[in-house]
Image (cartoon, rainbow, N blue to C red; front, side, top):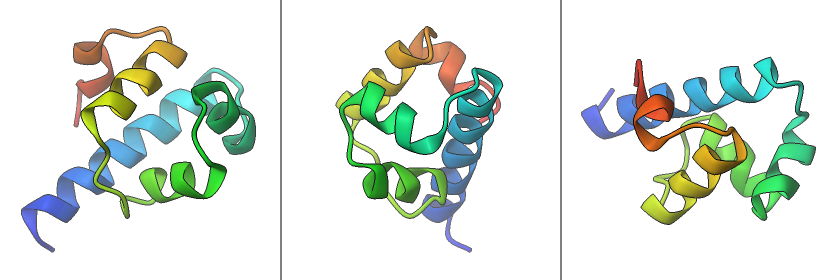
Amino acid sequence: MSEESDILLRFGKRVRELRKERGFSQEKFAAECGLDRTYFGGIERGERNVALKNIEIIAVALELSLSELMEEV
C-alpha cells in the first residue's frame, strides 16, 4: 500500500466514523455537503484524493475545525 492510499483510507475512515456518530446516512450527509453521493462514497472508501475545499466543506458540515477533522488521520 502506498503512503498516498494509506492517508486516503485513514481520512475516509475518519469521515465515516464522524458521519455515523452524528446520525447521518451517507446520502443525507453528501447532500448536506453539496457533494454527489457516489463521490462521497469514494471519499469514505479511500478512493478519492479530496480537494482541500471539499475537506473544509466536510469539516463545516460535521461542525468541526479542520484540525479536529484531521485528528487521528
